[in-house]
Image (tube, rainbow, N blue to C red; front, side, top):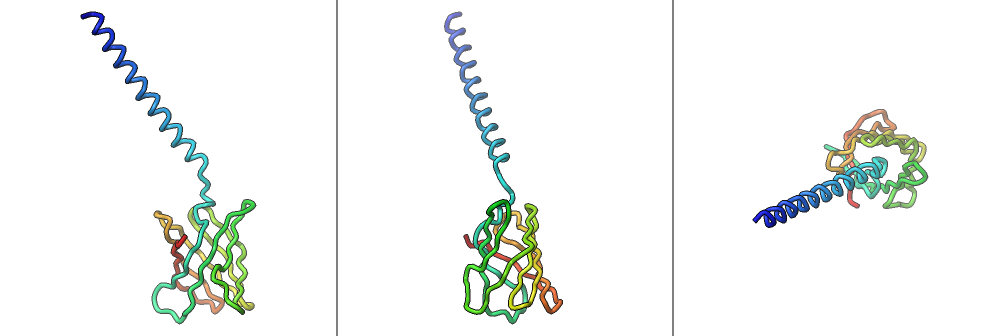
Amino acid sequence: MAYLSQVMQINQNINCMKRVTYLNFILTFIILSACNSNPQKEIIGLWEQHFVGKTDVRDVDTLEIRFENDSHHIELFNKQEGYEPVFSNILFDGKELTFKKDVNEKTNYYKYVLSDDKKWLIGTVETWKGTKRDIKLKRIK
């Protein structure tokens, strides 16, 4: 009986060691994943523009946001003849995105906050006319 008791104790110790090893593996994976995540890449993708409330805007811009050479780049994805905006002063701190858009000598300033679910950029645009409008971008890809 003493021998059987010792064998059972050894099996319990082995099972405990397996669980500790498994938990250490999971914890290591979580820590390494957190270290490798780059908040600058949170907004990479295609974003569809939506004005909030009443608007006279008929066209919907789709923006492509990329992260290359340690900086963000924005381009109009659904290009149209005669409408070639230039995006500059692009800054993203992991939560807030700001940029300037110049089109045909008219400048608009955008300021967005990334939603917690990372599906929306919600903010305002200060237009070349001096008015502020609520605007949001919906992640589509």
